[in-house]
Image (cartoon, rainbow, N blue to C red; front, side):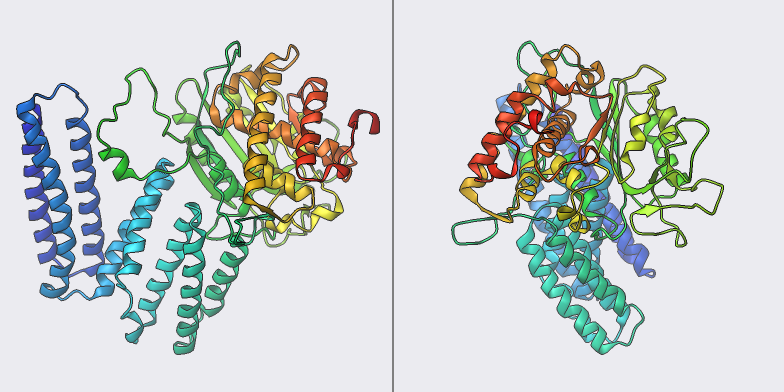
Length: 585
């Protein structure tokens, strides 16, 4: 009778929720507190219902006599959702709430889902946030705000648009983003025309930022009718090369990731730089609708088959101070489960040594600047030649030594990434650092504002390959053909890495995780491409790693070089690559 018990539990919970909501409505003296109260009640009730459904449907041996109870439960659950939708009308008519106030409640629920996504890194919650934000727009809850002579209410509407745009960007709903930007532009124009406020410049800057963010990708994929194809760079079921029989790799899994951004003049939106945005998506699986996933009949996960829906937990840190960064590092390190990996991604301005040093320790080669002080910003290179002390917010390789007590995977995209080549593994745990080129050919340097080329290779290697090949657009059919060939290249890279006799075992320890496996194969693809490209002539134009990869078996492997030339032939750009790069150095 377990199903009936769950049903009774749900019924009691629903009664308690109704009573709690009624009590909250009677205490509407403080509108702000009440709004948050309603949002919390909705969130708690919905979570309880989903937990109940999940528990009630987990067993296959439900007797036929109890199946009707399950059917009734599902019917009542849907009915309760309809009743809740009707509650909005009741609040409007009976309790004098204006439509913008109901819209604000829905907006806060959407924001709760967005923050829950940030906390859990589960992309399904982005869909839930989108559904609430979209409902506000469809039902025009904020339509009457402009008639109120209160600028603070208009600001609520503008903030709603900004939050909605962020969610749509993360879901790659670019068509919706463009519509929202146009609506936001009109709203800002009306706002600045009606009210002489101090934040006019700031809102116009928001528009400029999101417009630049949309145009950050250097290559457009086009349909036959010249409409833009929206491509997603999250991990799919066929994204990472499969582990083949005979591949001996570690069993570590990526659990936590710190994504840190502080690049001068790089396009950003809502404290999310282009590099951060791209790395964020490289560490996530394709989102699925949460409700449809839970309510799908007949789908049972095997007890011995781990789910593939989990994403690594992420901290997004935009321009953190050293103390903030170390706090998050320590917290992540403390909570890291057994047999798990912590990933640190640094996209930041380089801090170089101020002069000759007597030693060559982990603090003598500089590092990266995670937080820019006003008095020291000087382009991409930060120097303090007139001061004897080191920059406070510079993250040196030595600062990460304490965290090498557990498996650590580091990616450094900076003009001084080479500083992390001098890393030392003190504790014998798996440790790998992937390091960007410290400079790019002059023809490509002007594009740094739209994101780093190295990070683009790790996020969307085909787009990066097209960019260095001088291509700015491509038809969808050719794009898909190249993607298929790129998957073959990734499989070949995976075989070379796992069959190498001289490769450092740290690489293989990380190779069992899908996300890290994909990053490693893309890193090798990036390295081979740049070494063969005629414009990349200096060693500082090439990525490096710690420990070093065996060049003859990986980044200078003749088979991979042949693959690069074949991909270039498909795109008709073979002439910009060396035919035999080993002989042309």
